Length: 547
Ligand code: TEU
Image 1 (cartoon, protein in one colour):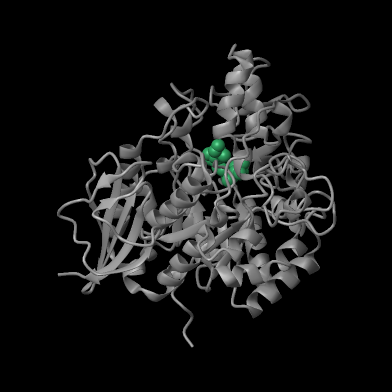
Image 2 (tube, rainbow, N blue to C red):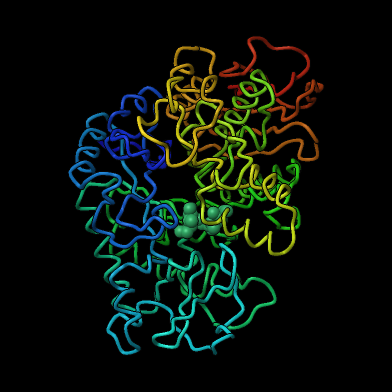
């Protein structure tokens, strides 16, 4: 039997630390995922993407890998991972691993060696440059704040670290390093995994090391040899295998993403980009309070949809991940239970009609909200804690910073999955590593499963439709009403079939749009009936003919 077209797949993202704890440690683990496999079968997803579970000091929750070949004991053992794969496969579920190859932890043995002396055999696995004691090699900024170079006293040089000071950037110019990376990826292929998500993989090729007018992104984003390296990675590892790949692309362009995903170029299957999730960063500034710009959101989403479709590329489509606040609190409305349910379903319908591979982040399918933290000691994320101290130093009022973090912090999505209304939302018997949202009595999986009208069943239905309807997978994308302040409307067209998606993003009634072909069968909606207006957050997906 030919394997199903990967393009019809839906992926569920698991952040293991916050998923399900079976030991009472307060942190989730692999056995906790095994225990919930039936839940994924009920939801209907195809792939589970696990964020990094390798050995790591966990300064960036696993994106700082100290050993690519070992499982972090906090998550369990290799045997647990093997069992997860076996049991997932037995249910027809596939497993996608997260691979971080732009940097490693400074505790990785390559770096431990590398920093010993300038002539160490691993020296060149990382990017070391001269500076002076108080002047780093360039003025580039780390994505987590501060200068991007860390000074190392012992060898009197700086190493590049685009993220945390304990995440040293690998030197992709070094062939031995690349060979070791490919060997590691092949190890996981042999282990039996079915896919990879490559962390910030468009940053691996650094160009010139020069000062910048800005934070320095232009020197390493989609850098000069990035396509060459990714093609080489493909040919040496997953290229000829049934492995689904997605690259996380930081501040990228459509032009590059067409190249990354054009099947003829043998690079990757699909890409994440984040432009549509910066529509509440006024002037590009994340650490500020702002409503989202709806017209900009539509414009960016649709530009990418149309261009990637026409150019033969492939998007990953998503609202949420472990770095983003909860979408229902962000682009929806969580002020009342009714609005949360309506807007949660609306956002699901609006996204899952698009072309690409849909991703669901744990808890999104039950409409989990931002937890509303209001004290700095509730935060755990390195980026959030850095931002707090930098903004304080710059003189910003502490209460304003806390308000900003409450809408922007990555910890908004990292609070434990709310399984039921028992203590700690059923996540742990111990002390959770980060507070459980106090909304768990109302918002939890057990309740969502019991209520046939919950957000969960909207996601379940959308996944089913994705599997059934070719038009959702292959159909071209036709945007409508791009200047409309309230409605998000588009069609998908494929061989005589049509899907029309209409979504009202506002908490008010708006007139039913004119000149939109909405004939046909309503496949799914968040209201029980249809009216001649679109009610608050009303959304529907309609199936008809394309004529
Ligand atoms: O994130 C990549 C990235 O660019 C982040 O800086 C993102 O823009 C930021 O988190 C938004 O505030 C990936 C991982 O998803 C993230 O968790 C890691 O911290 C990062 O890479 C470093 O590995």
